[in-house]
Length: 415
Ligand SMILES: Cc1cc2nc3c(=O)[nH]c(=O)nc-3n(C[C@H](O)[C@H](O)[C@H](O)COP(=O)(O)OP(=O)(O)OC[C@H]3O[C@@H](n4cnc5c(N)ncnc54)[C@H](O)[C@@H]3O)c2cc1C
Image 1 (cartoon, protein in one colour):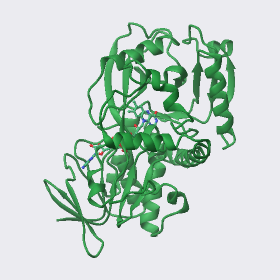
Image 2: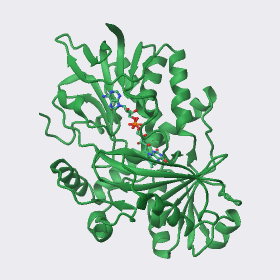
Image 3: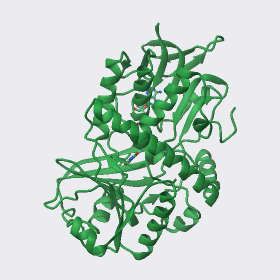
Image 4: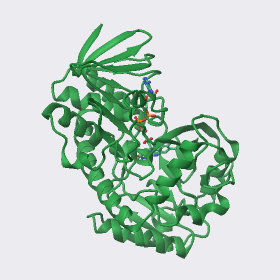
C-alpha cells in the first residue's frame, strides 16, 4: 500500500496547486487523477486572472433573466429538467442574491484574488506559464451596460482595485480591432492572463521535483477514515493511505464527500471556448464583451473566445448554438471574427457553488479530509491561494479565520 502524508484527489489547477504547496511545506504527497492532468475545466478556460471580481449572484438576476434562460443562444442557458438537487441549488443561489451577501462575497473574492496574484508572481519566477499583465477591458455596446459596469467598478475600487473609463474613441484608438456600435469600456489594470494548461502542467512538474508522486488514470472510487483518523483512498490500482486527504474533484459529482456525510451543493456550469486564427488586427488586451459575457484572450497563434453558462447537468455535450453564440456575439464588437478558421471547440464544467464562494475546509465528521471545491468562474484565479491556504492549515494544524468563512458545511444538511 502506498503511504504518504497527504493524498490529493484531482489533477486540475486546484489539486495540483494543493500538492505543490504541500510539498513546498515539506509534506510527502500523492496525487491521484482519474484521467490525465489538466483535462477538466482547468484546460481550456479563458486564462484570465481576475482578482477583482463580484459573485455571479446579483439581486434579481434569476427573475430578470427568466425570459431568455430557456434559449440556447443566450449567455445563461437553463434547459428545463427535473432535478431536485438543482432546484435546491437554485433556491440557495436565489437566497444569496442580496446586497449584504454580495458585498461580503465580493470582499472575500477580492481578498483571495489579491493574495493569489502575489503567488502567481512568485510562480512566474519558478517556471513559465505565459503570465502577462496587460490589464483587462470590459467593453460595452450600450450606455446602460457601461453604467452597470461602472457601478461594479466603484464597488471593486472600495476593495482597493483601480479602474479607468474609456470613451469609444479612446477604446478604438487603443484597440483598433473594436468595431461596430460600442459605447465605451472600463479598464481594470489589476488583471492578468496566462496559459492555464501550461500553468497546471509546469506546476505539476515543479511539484514532482519536490517529491510529489502523481498517478494518472487512477480514479479514487472510495474513501475510508480509520479509527486513528488516517485516511485510505481506494482505487482500482490499490489503496493509498495517508494522514490526510484533499478532495479537489472540480465539478464531478461529490460522491467521495458524500461518503463522509457531506452534501456539497456543487452544480456543473458548462462553459465553452472557440479558438480561432488570429485576425489581421488581433486584440492586444484580454477583454470581456459585457452584454454577451464573452471573454476574449489573445495568445500567440490563436484568439480564444470563452464563456456562456449552461446548467444542463453533468455532461460534456457540445451544443452547436452555444459555440455559434460565441462567434456571433464576439463579431458584434470585434473585426476579423466572422468566418475565421476555428482551431478548437471545447466545453467543460465549472464547479459552481450557490453563493459564489469556494468551499475550502475540513469535512465536519472527518477533520483530516479536506474539501476544495466550488471555485466556479474563478478557479484559475484562486488556484494558488487555495493550495497555499490548505497546505498552511494542514501543516500548521489550525484553520485560519480566512478559511472559516469558506467552510464546506456552511450550507448545512450534513447527513
Ligand atoms: C469556459 C470557461 C472559462 C473559464 N475562464 C476562467 C478564467 O478566465 N479565469 C478563472 O479564474 N477561471 C475560469 N474558469 C473556471 C476555472 O476553469 C475552474 O474554476 C477551475 O478550472 C476549476 O478547477 P478544479 O481543479 O476545481 O477542476 P478541474 O480542472 O475540472 O479538475 C478536477 C479534476 O479532478 C479529477 N477527478 C474528479 N473526480 C476524481 C476522482 N474520483 N478520482 C480522481 N480524479 C478525479 C478530474 O478528472 C479533473 O481532472 C473558466 C471555466 C470555463 C469552463
